[in-house]
Image (tube, rainbow, N blue to C red; front, side, top):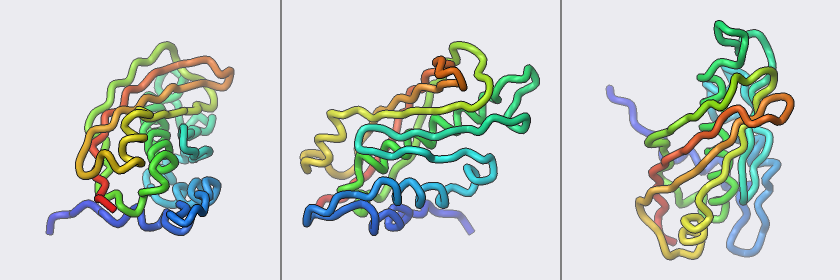
Length: 174
């Protein structure tokens, strides 16, 4: 039997996403919920630490289990943090319409590592504000492309990588 995408995944955010009656999103609760959603993230040990309308942040804890053969943080762990930070940014930016989202997939990604990352890695992601505004205003519905970017920082807050994120999204009309 073929597996299918879980298109109801965002329903879990509904109690925290605010509403059209003016109830503000509870970003702290959304962040807590996000930490339960991705089994692979829990397996690796990444932690979603921030969700807001402007950005999302994820941390890879310091530890030998995250190292590559050279003693730095493995590129795969850094990519995972950037990918999850993009998802957190999406949840925060699209909270007002989150229950109408039927598709949110990373289509492609480019990672540029600037230098080896050591210790805790923090990924901070943002999304194209024009596209976000167009969707929230109702100008854009249905399937569309969404650009994001993430920066990777080490324990000293030095930038160790930059990531371009290319998503495909589907938001149903109201």
